Image 1: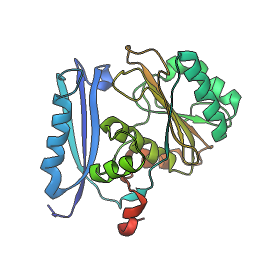
Image 2: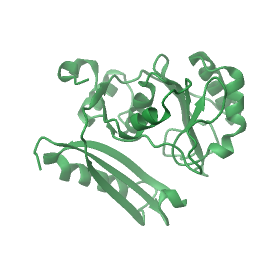
Image 3: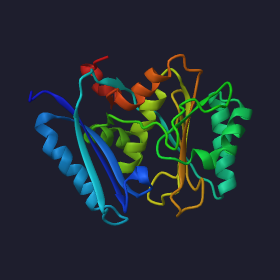
Length: 260
């Protein structure tokens, strides 16, 4: 294998069953790695899974795939934390932030009404003009994959923004940066009831990454991720971007090696 080849190293871990079969989520992650760093990347993900604060998983999968297309470099989103004290306040703030991104209020309400239906692994794609789900993937959503933010680069950025260099914040920011840097994405709404994780956020390229704490009750691990999109002329191309396009988040100071 070519020593300069790049690989996507993905990990999924859960209790009892795979995620697709309803297993309890323990940990997940993805790294973009050169061949020489492949062992380091695998060991990093193994350590993450086996030392998770919620215990050791009984199911663990690591997958390495060769990357055969150029990496796209994107800028990190700005970040802001919004503190709320009740579930209702969190939901109202999320509605307000989504409306600021340009999502019509009636489409936001239509999405909220179907939250139980949208609580699946992966993301639901909502047409911002009709409020209808357009991904048409039964019983699961679209996964966002092949993305990374090199740790040293992220830590320097976090220090400059006076925020925590928490690994979970890094992963959530990386995902949001990839999603929001596609021209068809208007905004992303995400929440999770995992007490160790980001409890909710609204993100867009123009507004940045808006964390919302205590968006829902802690403990039951239900959650939802919705991407509000313009009418997609080519759904397959958009999904391919989310699942297959390699993305590396880069701080502006380190863009001298940019590859578009």
